[in-house]
Length: 312
Ligand code: RIB
Ligand code: CA
Image (cartoon, rainbow, N blue to C red):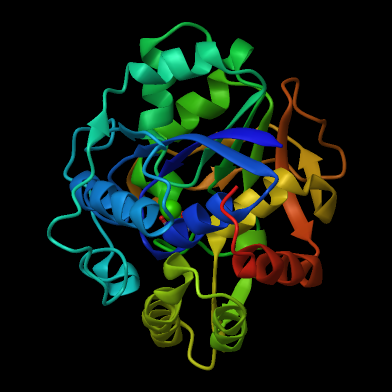
């Protein structure tokens, strides 16, 4: 069982990741940190609250993360991919409002629990703040899984940058420089974590869990959005779900240990760089980049977890 603190910006694939974590018997969510990213922090918070209500898990604290990136600029959101409210066409009911727990409570959660894995599937601003505001969390937290970066493939927001590292490259660089035991799950693997409507329908036929019953409308929106970007695509990539899958099933992926640097300005902003030359050396710190994963294993696990009716 992995004790996780999940940093997220739901967002469609973040929402599916939250549902996957709630239903996965190998995962215990200690808290969810809500931040700006795909949508505003306020919207992300209401979306998290709605998912937790549908899943009957309102006991999980929602921690208030950051509203804007380290640069202080106004963040760009992505309604064309995730919908105006972040759940495709679905809007959480008016009476569902997320109540935020103060960010400082994260330190109590970290002190009171052991063997914590931090999973950050959004911009890294809140995680950088956790490090900047507090004691040496890297020494206490066992490992960090980050969805971010693009190695040897094009980016998804610029020719070379992936959205999470692009959103706050200063924070991403700070995290990669100061923390240890980091596992980065970049676009070169997550682009291939494709889920189709056939998978979703199959899952929905196996369970009447209310949190699963909203999945078809949400995924239809997401898949249509991806079709506009990549005509002919039969499904859409669940970047954030793959990150959680590899966190609990590391043997299903292949990694390389390398230092990572993020460009922070101008045209290269958010670009992730690692040295993959034959002559290059492993990083001094334990920083690992996923290069490949077992797609069939991912699909089978996704269907099994999402169709189980038990919350973990
Ligand atoms: O680039 C993919 C990442 O950006 C995912 O975390 C997705 O949710 C978006 O925020
Ligand atoms: Ca995300």
